[in-house]
Amino acid sequence: MIKKIALSLLAVTLAAGIAMSQDKMADKKAPAKAGILQPAMEPTGGWTSAGEMGQKGEVWSNTTNGAAVDNKPNAGKSVTVTGEILDLSCYLQLGKHGDKHSSCGKKCIANGEPIGLVTKEGQVYLLMAEEHDPRRDGGVTFRKAAADSFAKVMTVTGTETSINGVKAVYVQGYLNK
Image (cartoon, rainbow, N blue to C red; front, side, top):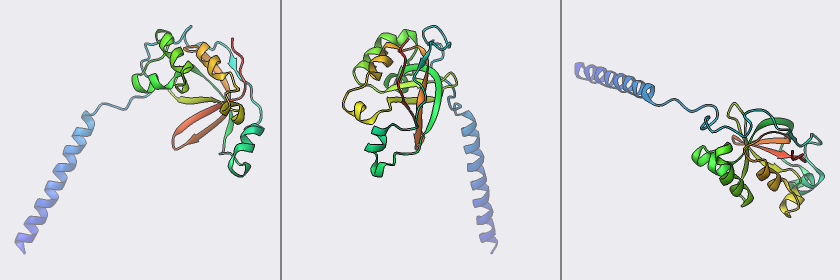
């Protein structure tokens, strides 16, 4: 009986020691990054909006509704978001953005890498043209406009959707300034 109590006390003491050790190790870990990656890499002209790249309309266009399963696309909401245009491949892999990354980023977008927007607070969005059929068939000019606007702070409007933490804005038209 005494042997069982001693073993139980030993197990409790060991468990408490492990828990305390893990807490101390957790305190030593680097805090999670918040905000924009590589904040020293400034967008062209700083964080002043260079203009608008779209205007709000219906949440989804007729071509998107028509292409959806049972004519019901995923839920979305009309939004206006301001941030720096960037290529997601270099930003997510290397943290690169801003004017210093402009020549590489423009090439990445022009050659098919995903287009992104990062807000001043560090929220990242995937950007795509909203019109489903024209986008699918190469009949939109948003990719070229985004490449031309690389590293500039723009305001985009369109439909936001989020699936499992991935946020996207489907841009509805744009004005390239």
